[in-house]
Image 1 (tube, rainbow, N blue to C red):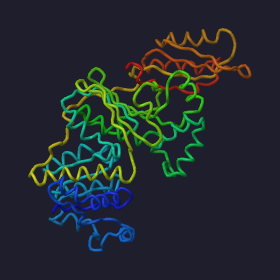
Image 2 (tube, one colour):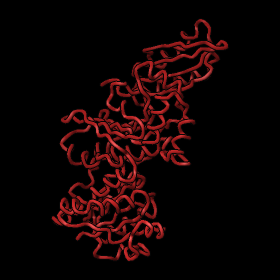
Image 3 (tube, helix red, strand yellow):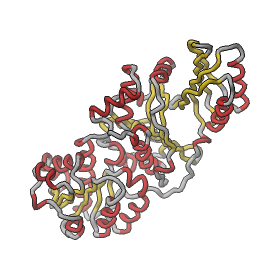
Image 4 (cartoon, rainbow, N blue to C red):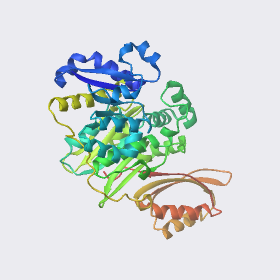
Length: 428
């Protein structure tokens, strides 16, 4: 029998406990031996007892788990940086293999954790840390390992995808849909980690580290959220043949890596454009495999538990075959991260300007002086001597666009730069 300990008995922890018992026979056949949760470490003991966890399986403190030689695998589902990092590192030093869903920890301290796993000859698996029930870590590390990955683009946050989908399909405002998402349990009372793009940034830091063999931390990811997106932007996107999505993007660019999270206009023909509601997807392009996409539920109790238990089964097989670290750290390169100002992209710009002759020529002159070329111009209804101007640029350097916008903001003919959104997927 392979014994495991469960740290944390929240939504995902209780799902892991249920899945290991519910599918015990199948899991035993696929592993080669039975797997059981010998100990559960959870501050809320009453919650565990009410769920049906036997009292003798509850650990009074972490030392009961760390000092138990019969426990082979520690499943960390506490979340956050500490005490999760300390528990994992102590468990590794005791020769215990680790499974975690902790994206915060991996995106910030992955280098340290992988080094400790290698030093102590234990497995460190984290499939559930990025996209819940969608397998993507293992495919990138193993199934696609013969490829040179060119890009990874993901819809990696169900909350923001739900909000943008509802705004697009129903024409509602951001604040209205956010309130609904909170009532349905799709968004937290404090939704900032989701709507500001930070959750997706942690996930793309992990995926890009694997895809490009370079350790990338969350603070190296350029991040914008969705709070500035309005129904007007979504309508103009639709009129121009696009949808608006919060994308997590990692690309190879002349031996540099660009890693960013931001809203984007995505062509309706792109595979990610049809990913709606709380669903997630990861689009990968490799030099041999071409374009592939992984799609499914990126969060939730049982989808995430599925990924966690999948890792546990894999480690169980490794234990039985006296092997470990078959898919360890792959960050053997140190490639430069591209500064966002050097990004080459097309842009959507919505601005309010004075409605009189010569204004467009003046704006075009500022763009031209800063090497920004305009592809499309739409002038919408005038109101009180003001007009709404919609511009789509050709592919330009982002810093040049920023310089041009800085000049325009100081001009009397420009009332407001309402929004600037990058276009993605237009060169497919």
